[in-house]
Image (cartoon, rainbow, N blue to C red):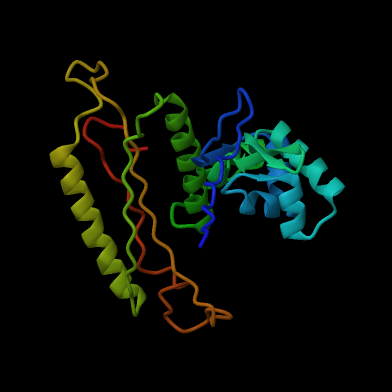
Length: 251
């Protein structure tokens, strides 16, 4: 009895100069051209499916879109570097160029809005939602900048703490604020270095920013917060917390 042995499948050939690439972890979008490509509905669908290399023909088949339309969008996304060349695969007598997404996740930088971006400096009320969003935008810009300055292969020294808490009244929330302020002041005073030496000259070291925010979480069933003494909206109880850092630099 004869047995046919199956030949192993050959690896997909690669385009010369275009080795197969793996997506980066995060791609920060800072220019309008890339932002437009990212927000375009069809291009976003293409990007979502290209965690693994695929050709325009494969994309067209999977998304059930005309080949010509897919070709156009793929070329535009490759031009803006949202897609990267990822080798070629053979189909019948031809080779098809494959592409892969440039990253696993994308972030739109506040810099895209220029002077229209949220700015904590223009919203001095530290207890307002606008000021909190302004701080979030500032944090994103500064972290983006830190990532730009960090050599390849190294990570930016960051820390993230995320925790849900529950309050039943504004008074309870106020007690939490006072205790949290005291704890932060104690930790900063004990473990952080001063910004200035005794003679007034700048102290050595690297400046880090602490951003502390707290906000109510909306449940899907919530329509409007109007309850009496609702800790989500009642302004009483919050205290404007300023963290004094050793030797200055509290802003």
